[in-house]
Image (tube, rainbow, N blue to C red):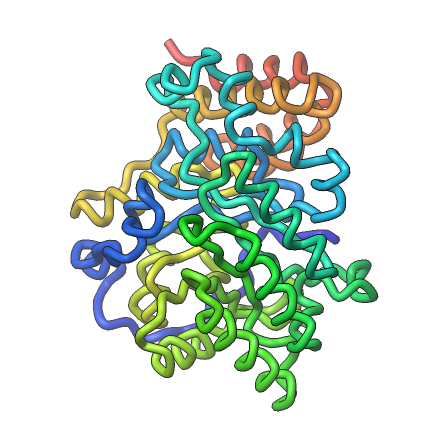
Length: 373
């Protein structure tokens, strides 16, 4: 499924103050780092299909992301030893991209923790087994995807299609929570409903309430319906209503976060406890540093050409290590489109990245446009 990479027209929303003022008075809810040590800021990198692999995560962490989520890993594929067992293992990635030893990787900044392994599937028993496997692989959190709107999974009731079948959804959630040790938090990603039909909204409410009753740490709720996919705008008003009616619960928000200022606008308008940054951090890892700048009361720093160069070189190196030279060359094209937006000659750089097929060509474009004295 194609994912729109440009923001929809912004909706006017009344905030209590400027985003910078909101950020200065914002602190992370102490329940969050208590549940997940190291999760020390009220924002994080989301799992986004086709993008949020180990390479993207490591670059985001180098620029201030406190917590990351893998793209959705299919339960059956995990159990059969496919994707997720090799290309998404956080410690294996760190050992291959860094210096080999776990402590050395931490010192070198190649440390993919804390991290949530996001699992998606259909059958409670397989989802339970896959969740238990993620714990064995070293994931700090297990996240259940009940938000993905891809059509091809509708017949299997995976992802967001569970929102039409609350009994099935609750059976999966129960099986996963029982399979994961109590010491490991479980979380869930939802959309605000299948669509705006009253019956579907009620189905969401049933699932949402069951999440907390079963002992899940938090739910991240995307402000679009499943039917919307990535079209139109996220309905922040729906998120605000959920938080107000469930004020005792940790609720994270998602949808239409394109800048550091948007993070704090969502916190203020919706009352969510943390914000999921998805499309807004593709090729823009500096959004996390800028959010930390705002919280510290300083003007957010734009990425210098030297910083852009280093981020690109790191992303290339990580992608090539994880995926191999041939696959990395293809994968990086979609990142180049977004990285180019920060360059003074953005359209020229974008065209050059789009034309790349190999990692050698990628590095050639970097040397051409990102040379620094």
